[in-house]
Image (cartoon, rainbow, N blue to C red):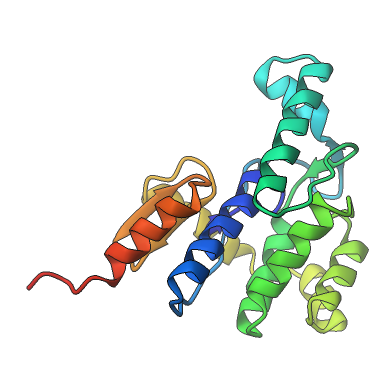
Length: 207
């Protein structure tokens, strides 16, 4: 699964995929890959999401607020609690680097889930390193190791490689899923769509 940590559709897509897996009762291995929607965003800074949305889509701030309210309703329908008023956007490379560390410690899903909940529900920062270390520790990572990663350039190349791989596969946005290395699913599709694709992946390969 390719995703960005500040992408509301990514958290929603993750949950819908998980719903399909639960419905089918199958065991899956999920590999999290990094994708930055705006890698040019200056590190250590953030801007109001409503302002970013208004600029990106040529809307007024009030229309951006309405878009966020609709997103909260969509999330709630899938059991997610979004509080988007006051949420900020920023560069997510440091968060993604910690996800790569977490993958090596067997904690990638826990860290991704914690970051999503912090950003979309609790309105905690994913752009301040002290906040990231605290959140990573809450998800089970060693705080000192997480801080050491953030103070170095560790996993920078891996984050960049993930983005390049996604583009090579034809992904222009996220979430983007590749199931069994055979089936691609773009966007936060319904759990029914994920169920159909998973069933296809479970079928014996043609001889």
